[in-house]
Amino acid sequence: MSIDSAHQEHKRLGTGNAQPVTTVGVSASALLCIGLEQLLSDTRFALWKRAVRDVSELPGFPDSSSLLFVVDGKHHPDETAELIRTLKARYPSARVVVLADQFAFGAVMSARHAGAD
Image (cartoon, rainbow, N blue to C red; front, side, top):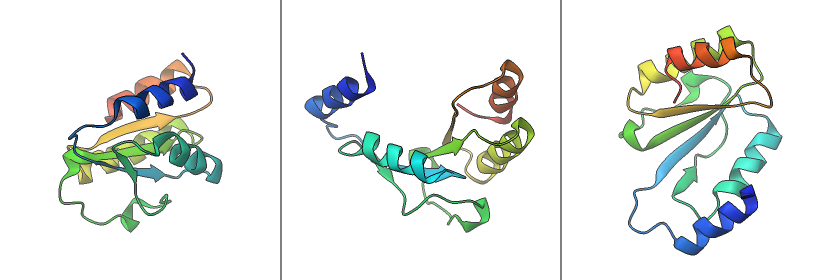
């Protein structure tokens, strides 16, 4: 199933009474932001105002359990892991995912140990 057909199926099924999930791009490129906006339109994933480069720019979200961070995986694995640790320390119930065009096994394990979902 292609991403487009999965997205269309999700639109068809609707989101029901599901609670919206605030979705924040972190250190995301413009292309990643545009792609996220396109993929997540008409879903319960509500993109936050803009992607952030620095976690200190983020407000204190009242309910981190309905919060998703999408981290651009283009950085060095150590930087990505530190960013994930910082996000999880500040928003312990939030979900954190890393998107990248390629991963080394060590980078995946580092991100996972840092708290990435």
